Amino acid sequence: MRIDSTNVSESDLLNCLNFKIRIIGISHRRASNLHVDGRENCSGYNINKSIFDGMTVHEYQQMIKLRFAENDPQFSLTKHLKYDIEKGFIVLEG
Image 1: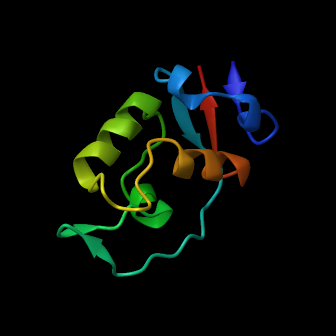
Image 2: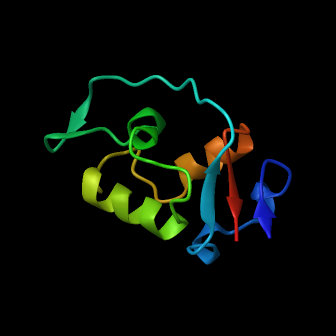
């Protein structure tokens, strides 16, 4: 199965933990220098610095839990991934 911009809105990414991330485009996200509890803010830009082709959704979520503060208003285990899929930067294969 493949999750891309055409079907991500109907997909629950929490049920796709073993799917692999495939980077298919360049994201042009920007970041601020904001910090929450001494950590970088949980922005798409900061997340994308740590993802790699072939990473599973579970590994992606674990990285977010380790790198970013849960009380960050931007903190989400799926929001940023879904955005990148919607914009065509990433697809999931599983």
